[in-house]
Image (cartoon, rainbow, N blue to C red; front, side, top):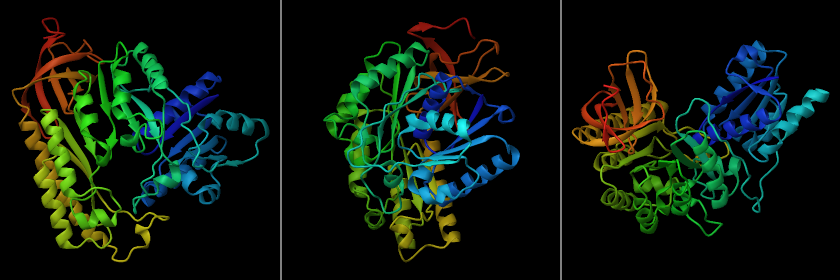
Length: 443
């Protein structure tokens, strides 16, 4: 039977979809990218915002209208956080959450045998361990994601994730090494370590994020290690020093900010001040020259005044991020922030988000300008028929180069590129060498 996967949300969900794909393949199901061929649809959901729930429901109803005989499976964060609400979505034949993903193949087989609707969402407990799952390839990706951490204990006032993912838990170093070896054998050169609250990796095991990066670095064939989104309060000098000592480590840091205003951060139940965040950025830049530092920034949190917004705006200017992801605050049922007074009108949130985005775009241009004339190893990910090849530097800058022959693919290859100019959203450069030697055969 053919099975099609639809993934919403973060890199963790992308990884988990890859793991579910591998599990179904092992049991004789055939994954397909063609919806028209699919007998089974698996929707891996996100529930970060109310908007994500709305998109999910639209997708479910569209699938049921277009594929009335297909088996539809709803899994992921939405049913885990809101099991009764998800169960009421009659378009799904099987409803299951983020816990016990290893059961999903069994549930599908059970449904195929008796055609009776299944709603099976197991609640998390404080004693849950890290569920073993792995994927040795991610379809269509040059870099591989590896989930090493799950769950969150933070309970930020705007966030539903602790309810959809449970408490923090981590993958063992032994399992990390084993999975990294499998990815290396399949030709992956770069691994991105991801998690729900990645900076807290190993908290319950007596290990830390640097231990995980060192474990991956020990695997032959893996040439680059990158980190997913990080909470800033757990990045100690010891961890930073050990990461800096790894030649394979890619110096790009996505440090979740949310706001540059101390009052707003306290209302969000964030565990750092703007001053502490800035001090961390300074330490990172001292240890990692030319590093990329990106952030999420929220506009229009409840009771955010115009003065609070201006304070956040000026902080973003001051830091000079290599890029930022800006989004207006979205009310999320089940969180404390949803019940707060002083909800900001939509038009004001939209205007504040636009102002933050404009500052971020300028910072991005300035960062790219600072790279002109410098050499960086670039892992190439795709090419087009016009001979333009696309890749990323270790500090996660998008680079385009033009070769004379469009027939030679550079995909999954690393070349040193000299940056010579910038565009609207990328840098342009010229290949100068590979593995220390001059390149003559692709010009």
